[in-house]
Structure formats: structure tokens, C-alpha cells
Amino acid sequence: MNPRLGALHPYPFEKLRKLLAQAGNPAAGLKPINLSIGEPKHDTPGFIAQAMRDAMGGLAVYPPTKGDAALRGAIADWIAGRYGIARPDPETQVLPALGSREALFAFAQTVVDPDAGAYVVCPNPFYQIYEGAALLAGARPYFINAQPELNFGYDWRSVDAAVWEKTQLLFICSPANPSGSVLTLQDWKTLFELSDRHGFAIAADECYSEIYFDEADKPLGSLQAAALLGRHDYRRLLSFSSLSKRSNVPGLRSGFVAGDAALVRAFLLYRTYHGSAISPVVSAASVAAWQDEAHVAENRRLYRRKFEAVVPMLEPVLGVARPDASFYLWAATPCDDTEFTRDLYAATGVTVLPGSYLAREAHGVNPGARRVRIALVAPLEDCIEAAGRIAGFVRQRALE
Image (cartoon, rainbow, N blue to C red):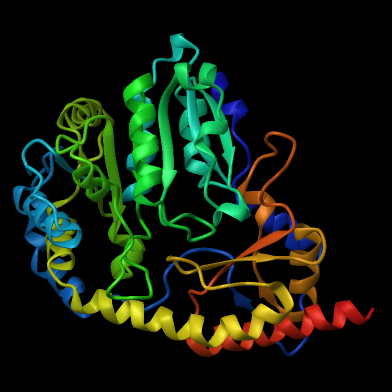
């Protein structure tokens, strides 16, 4: 048995199930509303499903590890159009992936040398795949805490030079999970300078990039930032994205990796053995999704309505504000976040996720403590109902 498996932490939702079991059944007569998991609930566009049905003949052939040429081309076109940059080379700078989760994990196994005492730097709070990927690659995770006073950004200069010297990979998520904050061009300039100085790769997790609120102010992307800073070869940078949130197809398991041709080449070699080729059936549906923006704009409209309705209800009791992007609220709690989550569920049937489950104690604090993540993925009426129950619960607790 791989001894590194013992270093893995339970996944947040496994911990959440155990926590909610302590609460027993929620109040009778209340419909349960789950806002804990970031699983899109909007309808999958019909044309994507139709493209999949039309491609069923593809089940009769093995898919290439490099991915279908039409899909690589559609992804390259989308990147160029979305970010206003030169079209990446579909032959050398783009790889389709089975969603961003699979690719983020596998990439760490590609670039980490476990014999070098390597660090993998991760944001904190974070997507737990980063930590698991680092541990199973034989590296040590180093957490850099999100700072509320920096719009939940990071003080990159606070990391000791000795850590950067041993860092082989940096995971970064923008828009961030769970805060929704977006890295600025200055943030990227700092990260690129650190990467040049110390030689580490950057894995930019951008799976929330298409959930934003102002059509005239789209979140800055990593490849876009690199191009703006004259780094047209995207050296030591890979962008990871997915159709799951953008197109409401989490079950499709389709995304991409794009950027530095040398990293793509090494990653392709790893994936040749990893067995992660995308079916032609999924490829056809993915091409259809990447080539259409109307359904994505409609998706954003639906999320925008939820934030417009819910934020004014929760701001007075939890101090929430609309994030830069994504579909989460990162809410402060008046008590311990696990206690809040358990008691909220028991009293109201609403499920949220404790912030401390999304973070690790680092540098003397757990930056997720006394916060909860609220995913506005349920239908609008359910989100409004849940917000009303949460607000009533908080006000009642304040009177006790």
C-alpha cells in the first residue's frame, strides 16, 4: 500500500456528513436546502446533449490521449476570443482533460521531484485536490493564508525565500474558491517574477472564470496576464479550466490545460500512461459547448439574480458582500463555524459548508475558521427561502 495515502485528510463533505449526523433530523415540515456543494443545478443546454447523442458512433474507437483535433481547435479559439490574446497553438499548447480536477491532480505528479524536498505552495483556504496532489507526489504543502484586508488575496512576499527556493509548483485559484476574489495584474506580475527567480511551475485553476457579474468587466485570466506582461510563451504557466460551471455539465467531465508548450509536452507524456483520454462522444459535446456563448451569458444572468436577491438579506446578519466572481458567498459566522453549520441544519434544514473544512491551520491560524461557504447553486426560490431561514436563525441566536 502506498504509505502516502495515510497523509491524506478526509474530504470536506465526508466531515460534513458526520457533523450533520450530530444534528439529527432537521425541523419537521421544512424542505431541506443544500447550499454546501458547488455543483451547478441549472439545466444543461439541450444542444450540448444533442451533440453528444449525434456522436455516439465515437464509442467504437479509442480516443487519442492528445485529444480530438477539433476540440483542441475549439478550445484555442475560445481562449483567444475570451481573453483577447493570440490563439494558442492547438498542437503544442492545448490539451483536453477530464475536467480540471483530474488535470490539477495529475499535473503535480508530472512536475514534482519527490527526492528534492519539494514544496507545493497552496492558497489557504483551498480546493483539497491541491493538497492531496502535493502529498501523493511526495511534496510538502505550504499554505499561504488569504487575507480579508487584501480582499482575501495573498501577501506573496511573506513567504520565506528558503521556501520559494524549494518550491516546484504553485497552485492558485482565480476566481478563488471560496472567496470569489480575482487576482490582479500586479499579483500575476509578482508571481511570474517569483517563478522566474525560483523556477517553479504555476497551475492556475480557473474553473470559475465564467461566473461573473459585469459583462464589461470579465475576470483577468492567467494567460491573458502573461500576454499583457510580454510573456507570450507562457513559460512555466498552465491554465486549467472546465465546462462544468460554465456550461452546467459537471457530469461531462470535460476541461482543458493550456499554456507553456514544454509543460504541455511533459504532461502529455505522463497522460499517455495515465489513461485519461476524452471519448469522441464527450469531445463532440465539448466542441459544441465551447463554441457557444449565449448559454453562458444566460447562466450568469441566473446567478446574478440570486446574488441580487440574497446578498441584501444576509448582509445585515452575516456581513456578506457580492464577490468579484464565482457563485459562492464567504460569510462570517457569529460563533464557531462547525457549531453554526450543525445548528443551522438542525433548526432550518439548510446546509452550508464550514470554512474551517476548506482550510488548514497555518502560521498560527485557520483562515476558514468562523466562516461558512454558501453555494448559490439551488433554484432562485430555494436560495431566497434559504437566505430567509439563515437570517432568522442568526437573529434568533442573537436573542438567546
